[in-house]
Image (cartoon, rainbow, N blue to C red; front, side, top):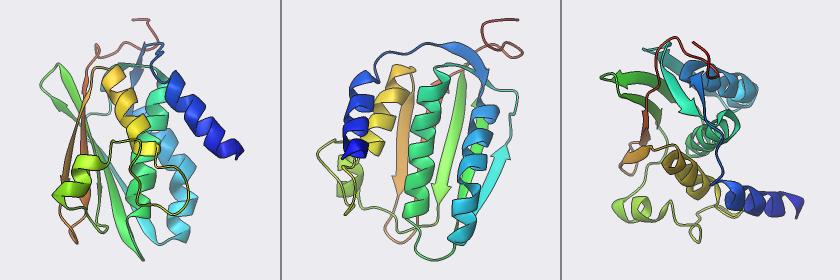
Length: 174
């Protein structure tokens, strides 16, 4: 019950962001370190490719970390048996940073993709299904966009595009 209440409170507070310039790769690596052992136990490989490991984003570190964690956790849950979750950071010119989270899990059909960011929709037996709607709200709050590429049986890719900060700047200092 506490977990359910916490999810609701987190969802309702998600609009208040405290933005600071911060390296994306550091946030992603924290998530990988946090979830690595669970992935290993499930036979899931976490493949990280930080093509632009100096990419900086104006972010609320805790909230963005929570959003990305939700995408990675969902990717892991979509895999039955062994598989791979790939996390890629790349730049789209100088004004956007792209984070791609891909899995080789069960995939989704177009109707499911339409509904995954709806708080009333879930395919899970446990939980409320607020993880992706919350993540979507946090990404939008950061001026970002999410593109979902998926086909049943072929896995899913969440492509998150966020506005870039200035290279070399961290926590508001140059």
